[in-house]
Length: 168
Picture 1: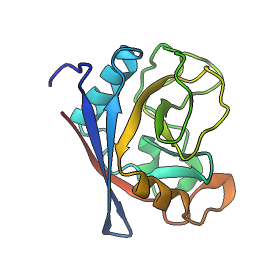
Picture 2: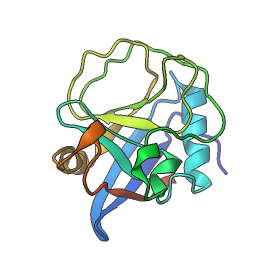
Picture 3: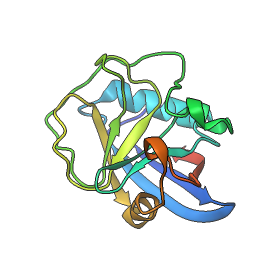
């Protein structure tokens, strides 16, 4: 596995209902969040994200994925899982604008693990979430996911699946 650098990019390959939905290409911010970039790239290279879904969608705010529990058909536990370790917060001054990649966490600032979100639009989140990348291509895919019908707890009726994430 290669170590992330300032030029590290990741591509998320996504399907919906068994059909290729598209790719989201990310530039990762190793300079401001090296621990989060290293964690994300390691999990991606190990195939951790393969088969997980975008389990939470809030149009005009964000799409969230990366929960290993989302592989389970029992949706009650979606949004509650992680990799079994935590990543120390690396808050920075980058704004949560459209296309920004940030780590999801609980109330504990140092509780990020595997779940991430991509901002669908500029949002007024405080600098209390670690921003570690941005979308460079594929915002049309983010828009398509954000437009999906949702039910309770902002869960899409048919959540798109992350087939794989490649890192280069």
